[in-house]
Structures are given as structure tokens and as C-alpha cells.
Length: 531
Image (tube, rainbow, N blue to C red):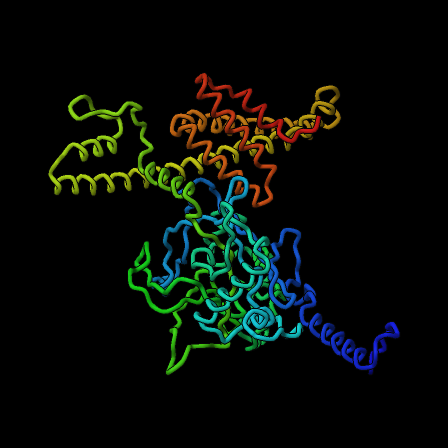
């Protein structure tokens, strides 16, 4: 059908035909970059999704993964892996640490793909021509190797830096970048991060309110039935991340390493895939699941219909001279949290309060090169030991604060449950006996409940001097900030009030050494009370 343009008479037929041709080309070109409908890249939108643009009018949805801690060199301790002895050589439980890339309030965060990278998104980045958006394009991009997933992140980053640098989160003014997740980042997000309690975090699977088949595409006719599925059809994990288990295995950044009981073995292997796939049986699915995959097979790259990937957005660390200096200062302070003298000492004058300072002073004083090196090594060992003890103290203080706010909340709940019983007893039994049997039972219940509250108050009061004396204000404030960030992430802002009250009681005792049970009890039970 020929387009008819109403143009001034001075345009001749040849000019009109030329303009018509240009107009059709412009329409065709603009069609290739029309914005995708969200059903192709984010079928389950959330208000706090982070959306980054892509070539060809595309977009990719991300979720924030919060990690407590904002100071230089500060990270968050976690336990990864599982307890299945059959897979101990690969997955045995081990301690690890994680920190986010971008700062926000009392925590840092990194971004992780809400869904596995789908075929439409992959083609938009890697192909010369823009793909046509379709529901089939929402299938995860499978049959990819580690090198191809790296190539995708590189091409996507180059496009973002050229076309949408301002859309990337930044660290100290330096824009972030897309990459594969580390194993630690992947498993931390897969388990639910701080959105789930610590005890639940270490379970075989993330919390599921329904049957596992409502969250994970598995082997069998009742689930995937041997076929890869569209992303986002099932329920997400607690961080609103979809298909983190099942559907396709997900490639991560790290090379494969075996497990040596409490740590990774030193030998690096091929690449790692996590999470299982649509051919994995239900009994085998676990968040700790990890497999080694060879980079090459026969004479080419190893590819599989069960292998795909998702990406994260992270950042550089040493972004400026000021940041480098911050890390240097923080590093020098590690393992030195014993109070140091503010006046430098010279050998022979006096002993230093801090053994690390003492060793450093001795190191400077000796002239023998061998002895100097041995003292330097000893200093590093001592600092490492002190830092490990400091981290242990942080964890213990965190647990003490958790217990404190739990007990405070328990006092409030017990008192709230008892209040209507006492009110009814006072109106029905003290003024006029209407039911002697009821009054006797009610009086006994009141006595029993009050005895329990008294015991719990005693226990609560006992924790305060112990916690206040065992931990410094610096440690308690640091862990209070960490807990506040965790409770906010879990949408438990109401509990923060109990944490605030417990911290106040610790400060009161530290200031005057007085135990004020009645006052503390009233503070706890008045939280949330409507007068």
C-alpha cells in the first residue's frame, strides 16, 4: 500500500518518492527500538525493582541484596554449604564473609538479576540485529559457556557506559558494572540474605510456604517434564528472585574448588554452575548444590541445554585516592582494638598497653634484618589473632542484643495477654462474686502468669549488667546498627523499638550501675501501647 503524503506543490514526483522511501525507512528503524512490554523481561513487577535499560528498547530487572555494614574493611559473616556428608567434598559447611558494593543507610547492597538472562535479552546484546520481542524470548538463555556469559557482560557494560551510564548505581562516583556473581554472592542471595533468620538461612532450601514445585522447576511430569520453562512462572524466594533453583543451572564467576572441611581447597578447576536445573530430581535440590563443568569438551566449548546464567551489578573498590587511604587506615586498625597509648613510647622508657604497638616499637628498634622480619611476621600473626577475637566478640554482642530485645518483647506480650484477664477479674470478682468457680480459676491464672513474668523480668535484668560489662559502647552500637539494618530488611521495624529500649537500658546501667527492674519493665510493656 502506497503512502500518500500531503506536500506543497513545489515537490515534484521524484522528491515525493524519495521522501516516502525515507519515511518508510524511519518507521522501520524506529520499530526495532520500541520499548519492550514488561511481560518479556519482568512479568512480576515489584515497586522496589531496579531496572536497567538494554539495547533494542529492552530492559533487565534487578533486586537489591542488602548486606549489613558500611565502614571500610567491614564485612558480614555467613555460613555457606550444606551438611550432606555424601557431598561434603564439594559442599561441606564453611564460614565465609560478604560485603555489598553500594552504600545505603546502615548497609551496603549489590544488585542481582531478578530472573535468569533470557533469550531475548541475550540476543539484544550479542546480535547485530535487534530481535523481535516474543514470549518465547522469555526462555532462559541456555547452551552457553562461561566464556560466552563473560562476553555478554562485557558487551552489555560497553553499551551501558555509552548509552545509560547515569542509570548504573555508583560507588564513590564511579559507575558500577555488570558481571557474573561470585559463588558467595549467588548463595547468599539464593538463601534469602538477611531477609530470613540466621537459622533458616542455613536450611537446605529457602523458606517455602507452598510445595517445592511451586518454586522450582524439577525433573518429572509433575514439574518441568524435561523442558526448560519461561522465566518467572513460579513463586520467588524471600528476596523476590525467581528460578534461583531449578530451570537452568547458573554459571558463577569463580573457578571450581573442592571443600577441605572448613575452607576451600587451594586447587582451582573448571567453572561452576549452581542451583540445579529442570532435570534435577526433587530429593537432590538444595541451595548448596554446586557442580564443576569443563570449559571445553572434545574440540570446542562445552555447552548444555541445562546451563544458563544470571548477572549481578557490582563495583570497583579502590575508586579514588581518598578511598584508598580510607582502606589503608582501616587495614592498619585491624587487630588493634586493644586500647593504645596516645603518647608514642621509645624502647627502654616504658611498656605499651597494646602488645601490637609493643611489637611494632621493638621492630623499629632492632637493626638485624632477620630479626626485624621475624618480628614483623609475629606482628601480623598477632594482629590476625586479635582481629579474629574481635569478630567473635562482634558475633557474641550481636547475639546478646538479639536476646535482649526478644526478652523485652516477651515481657510486653505476656503483660498484654494478662491485662484483659485482670480487668475482667477485677470487674467480676473483686466487686461482686458472680461465678466463684471462674474467679478461683482466674485468680490462679493471674498468679501463675505474674510469677512467669517476674521470672522473665529477673532473667531480662540479669542480662543487662552482663552485656553492658562484657562489651564496649563501640561494639554494642556497631551491632545495634547491624541488627537495625537486618530488621528493616525483614520488614520488622516494630521490633526495632525493643532493640532501642534494650540498648537504652544497657546505657543506663553503664552510667550508674543501678538495676531498675520496675522502670525497665514499664519501658518494655509500654511499647506500642495505645493509651
